[in-house]
Length: 134
Ligand SMILES: C[C@@H](C(=O)O)C(=O)SCCNC(=O)CCNC(=O)[C@H](O)C(C)(C)COP(=O)(O)OP(=O)(O)OC[C@H]1O[C@@H](n2cnc3c(N)ncnc32)[C@H](O)[C@@H]1OP(=O)(O)O
Ligand SMILES: [Co+2]
Image (cartoon, rainbow, N blue to C red; front, side):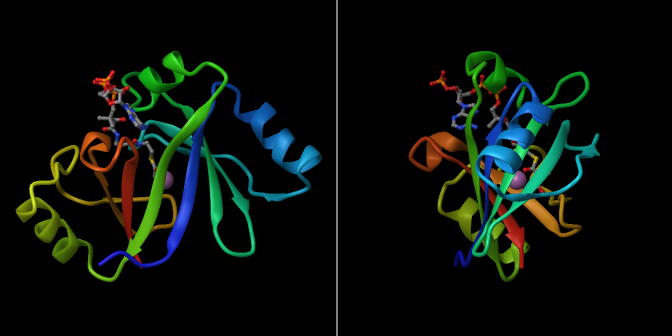
């Protein structure tokens, strides 16, 4: 069902500092920051030849990553995003298999303008999974 790895997300408390590390120390190509209030995050994408790294900073009240950043003040790997051909078919198969789809179960438009869903980390070996429609 899952296809390409789209991105690995790293949650941080200081997005500007993390962006500078990727740009200046690791020599990567980085995007401008983008605020996504409906996701409670501000994101910067690091463009690698074969995938992206998504740097995330909490945005606003009730950010879904606030607890994670509080527990990991130095930052930490937050989720893996896999591409799927049809997000609703994937969701329904995963629900039937007993996986917990987070939120209200309806896809939201993600950072790339495509529908995304999240799956509970405890159902996937401790790793939060994002699905993005290819
Ligand atoms: C823009 C978009 C895009 O790319 O297009 C994005 O990525 S937006 C990216 C931001 N949006 C999301 O992450 C949306 C989906 N995420 C969520 O709904 C939330 O982050 C949850 C996954 C439910 C976790 O929320 P929260 O930490 O507040 O809940 P909690 O404290 O009850 O945590 C429940 C248990 O899960 C663990 N836990 C929490 N976050 C985790 C993570 N990222 N990876 C692995 N485990 C994690 C906690 O340590 C705890 O374990 P113990 O019980 O063992 O202590
Ligand atoms: Co993501």
